[in-house]
Image (tube, rainbow, N blue to C red; front, side):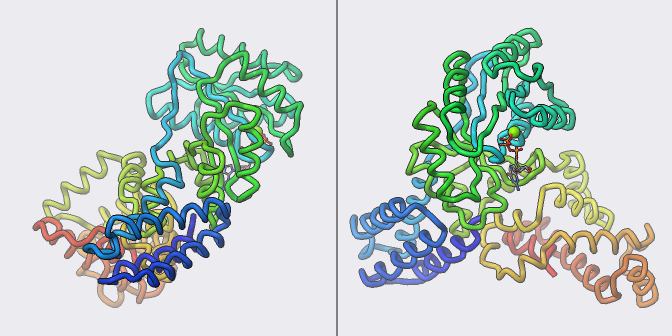
Length: 445
Ligand SMILES: Nc1nc2c(ncn2[C@@H]2O[C@H](COP(=O)(O)OP(=O)(O)OP(=O)(O)O)[C@@H](O)[C@H]2O)c(=O)[nH]1
Ligand SMILES: [Mg+2]
């Protein structure tokens, strides 16, 4: 997500931060770089123009250049403008009725059906009782897809025989939700290749009859400025309430995310970050702006940890840490938890300062590395895991053979583990190293 934009903006920001004095000429250079970086990220040119104008206006006003920390202040102006372009406040779904209806609309293949299932998972976690509804009446396979997703996540799916009009499906779904005391109805509608009139007419009829609390347009972030055009066209006909930008995990540029709010006026409620049903994140403009500028996103990281990490297991490990009884078994269990949180590359981007690491360092912290570490630990005897100091040359060779690695790999892991124990002791004694540095030295090669 946003890799190249992020790298370029961080370059500008780092140069600005380092300066004790900033002249108007410096500012011009910085703004030119920002402009180019945004255009290269495929951001709408009007949005870029306004972005640069606002940052300039802010930097030239209110004694910023002549005041204290001019660099920091310009960086703050860039940050604030990014937050603004991304939408300012977070959009929280309105679920004001029982049942509330959320209608998902969008072009073919944009990710409506997948997003419906992902939303159901999220809503259930937040204490709601969702009902998924297959209102894609044109393709029988579409109904099967939703039914199978519903099975997989354990959420009820409402279906009607092929040929039932979408409006009738929506009505009967609301009725079923009422009878079964389910409080959120997620309506998955049919997509078309292009915005066409019959589809719009049908959607307008359904929305008019069953009055959704939220009408979410699902758009594919990878389509860049086309996504923005599609959003404009839909919004022209349907009163949309918010957007879901899917496939952000595959979109390196970010042009859609950075343009769509300003152009359409619609907030982005969620972003899709993977094909799995847990690949949906609430969209936080401020956090994303910080991530883009390399300030990290420790809040999302903590939330992700809370959602995925087994609390009891975490407490058990913490307890052992405090008692200085932390072993390689505990280390392995911790790695399993980290793995559950998702691709390491994504996590590293959330750690403040970590994005300053060269790409090479990030790659070292990859999932393959984790698998290797696990294999090595699995090849040790229980005694060796508790007392790694027992591991001398011959044991090292045996472990390497058993895990398909080399004695040097085993050695490296043992050294890392030793380093980790040292960090843990420091942590215990209150001399906390920077989170980023700590994690890096543990996971990095
Ligand atoms: N990588 C990635 N893939 C996604 C994401 N969201 C959806 N997809 C994939 O995109 C493809 C299309 O998703 P669907 O949910 O079937 O799209 P749809 O809008 O329901 O399509 P129609 O029903 O044909 O209109 C599937 O292969 C999904 O796995 C995402 O956030 N990231
Ligand atoms: Mg579908």
